[in-house]
Figure 1 (cartoon, rainbow, N blue to C red):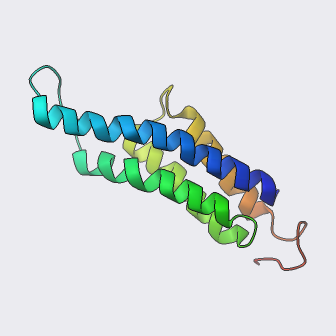
Figure 2: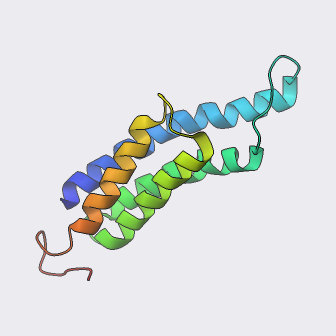
Amino acid sequence: MRNAALVLGIIAGVFGMIVGFFGYGYTVAVQAWGDATSQVDNVQLVRLVSVGSPLLAIAGGAMARARALWGGILMLISAAGMYAGFGFTFYTVFPIAFAGLGGLLAIAAGKPDEEKAHF
């Protein structure tokens, strides 16, 4: 389960980076040339989530083998951040689902994989 959490966290981070590039870029483009479109409600939240959530997903996935509890918590925070910043849309369904499932698998992988459990 730790290996599955590792893979899901890294994939969620990569997909989240793609969504984050467009989210951050959109806020910057509207700020520069905002006549044609409207700005999002909370620019700072979108920018923070665009950078922070993929980072947390990749870090949580990388930590899932050694420290499953911490890695799982980071991936769940990443999924919650992506949901808060971007909502649940066609483009965010896979990063949110992969980070959430990876977080749950990492937290559930307490004892079966290693003799050193995190709880």
